[in-house]
Structure formats: C-alpha cells, structure tokens
Image (cartoon, rainbow, N blue to C red; front, side, top):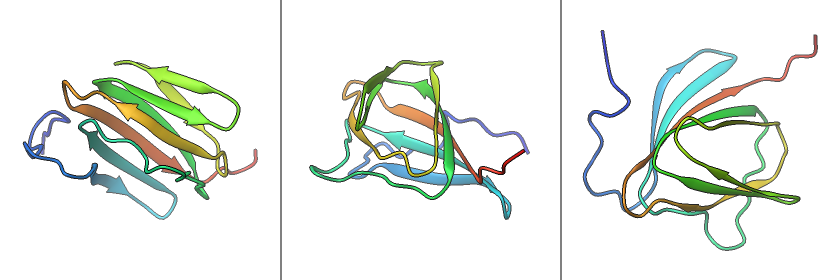
Amino acid sequence: MKKSLFNNIPDALPNEWVEVLAESADVRIERIVSDGHASPDGFWYDQGQDEWVLLVSGSAVLTFEDETVELNPGDHIMIPARRRHRVESTSSTEKTIWLAVFHENDPI
C-alpha cells in the first residue's frame, strides 16, 4: 500500500512524534516529526545502534560532544552507535520530518 511521509501527521504535537514504518530483527525505520522540539537540557542520546538520518523537511541542529551540525531538507548524517548527541533545535515555523534508520553495525 502506497503511503507518504507527509500525510497523517497530527496538527498539534506537544511532544516529538515517532512512527515505526518498518522493522526487522536488525533494522528499524522511523518517521519522526518535530515541531519546534529540542532535547531536554542536559539530555544526550547514547544509542546502542547506528542511526542514519535524512532530514526530509524543516530544519534542525544536532549537537555532538565535538561539533554542531545544521541540517536542511535533503541533508543526511550517519550517527555511529554510542556517539552522544542531542537535538539542539528544530524549526518552529514548519514541521520537521526525519527519516531515521537504526541498524546494527556489523563488521565486514
């Protein structure tokens, strides 16, 4: 069944909205929608899986311990497992839509 990343998004988002689009034992694909959201003060993501993120719409700023990265539509970034990061800000004038792929880092 055909679906769109832009459809069926709630108008009001008191919190960041996460929808799992597909998953298996090794991979999870999520649509994340932010609306002016940011990580709470002092909070850092420290995930056990690699995360590849594509910013579909809106804008965002990610902060890592050693750098800050601005993302605009079409930008994507690989976040290795255990690389601490936080969402510093997302657009407050339009919804920010992310496509995130979480996967295990299997050595080749």
